[in-house]
Length: 105
Figure 1 (tube, helix red, strand yellow):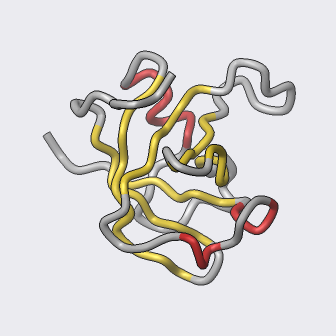
Figure 2 (spheres, rainbow, N blue to C red):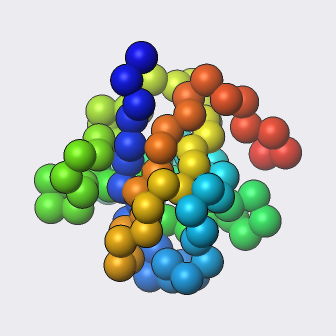
């Protein structure tokens, strides 16, 4: 199966890009309460909580990555990801849908 990458955006509204490190584990969780986006997926760090969202707009999805809409149906409620690159205020994450999220509620 081909590797999937996504863009985490909006990090400036939370803790900023400085908290991310390459190789860091990210929790991707469907946000059913999001009134602006039916396919919203929030990004979380286990120790902090919500740190941004998976980009779901052609203007915010980095080239070579998939939108939240493209991966939304590939996992149940949550899956894991791993930070691959940090480009300014966009975090590029490799999706790991087969990995179970441990320690999450």
